[in-house]
Image (cartoon, rainbow, N blue to C red; front, top):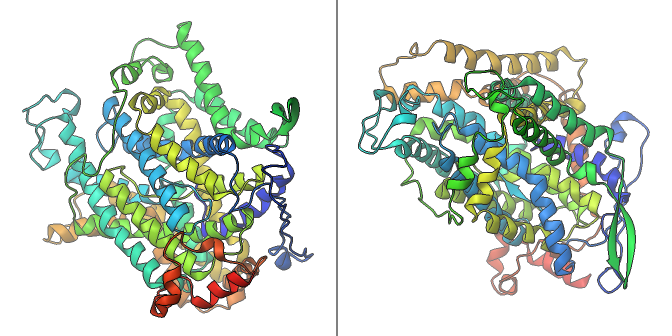
Length: 611
């Protein structure tokens, strides 16, 4: 899940409690000096926002673990992220008209994992250079669904029976030649919207405007925005879960069992070191709760299918819980699939789609900044300087453009659950996340590997959605911890913003065709914007919070900035870990370069050399 800027910071603080659980023991030949990051405790609620826990690192950000540990921990990060990344193409399958097209779904899964790996390598190498994983973002899902809900993109009834050179229904509003073109033309529209909208993120990063924008965005704007991302997806969760509520409930129960009830249970594992076997304790359930929960429910579905307990007729309730429905996806998938830019055709651009996607870009930007501070704290790095944040946002924008060119149907953002894993494993090495990126790229090339995920029964996916989307909605609400909830002003802003974000899109969906200005493009812009839940909630929250009088303490700005200031207290004065791996010598030669918002100043370079 992707947490909001401040919600993620607090989430990371709480997750740091697990840092004392050792994950891997290493011998003295590889272990660097331990680092201890400590901060003062406080008693009051307001001062409690400043609390931190110590993080004893085995490997800090610049350390290089042995290759086998890089692969093992890298694969662990891959597993942690796979649920969130996998959910995106599965959500988009129906609006893209590929609900029954397993080959297309397999290609989308391969593409999104491939691009996520590519963006992870870019972010860890030339972005913030923090050990932070990039993957698909739910902030782009809401505007994408709004775009694909336009009348021109409604799926034709004959998609499943179309053959080459046949003519689809007029609902597609474009000449199509086969069933693949039915979904590809929709994908190209999403690609174009993400590509153009992501230019804004690059501009915000390269010019340093991201700091200016965030000055006007407070908890009362972020809370309804992130909250509505989760709430707006309840229909998708209900559709999947409704295929078999028993299996969906089992999935939820298993995920809760592993993530909450067994989170403090460490599993004894065996390792071979110094020519002898040793036992160490590992928080297995805490790290792989979603994976274990889904696999457990998947296994139950397999057994029920094997013994023919589940219905065999597609018309009977519970049929979608069978595991043999989509086996053809694995058998028919190519062993090797190389995603490439423009594989679905040349992206198309429309004003309405771009404006709708801008809301997702801004929300994604807000998400990531909080991740940078949390990741730095858990990886033994000093808080990220301004140039690193600007560069990170710019590289995320570049990553979204790459995702658009490759056609993943989504953008990229930082993954907070992987950041939390840094504190648990006590390995904050940048090299580990770079290894994860390469693993995602390599595994994304194998078509049959991606096709395996398609065989997961719908109710199992629905159970995962119930937990995941609920968590996203709750994280949005968690931003209110900074706000005075006894203030009628704040309650009005929060309630009206959230309620409007639910009412207006629902009304527009229930009354299609009522918007008719006489200008088709303007109609589409209005429909896309007013059917995007997070845009409505975020817009009203932003406007009301900045126009209705209120003190900074009442609005939560004071506590929020206090958190920022405490997060930016340097634990170490050496910020060289944020320097680019190349061309740093040229900065002293060309002094004008230090004025670029995404490059370090010469002064900071000299301070790093004196450390």
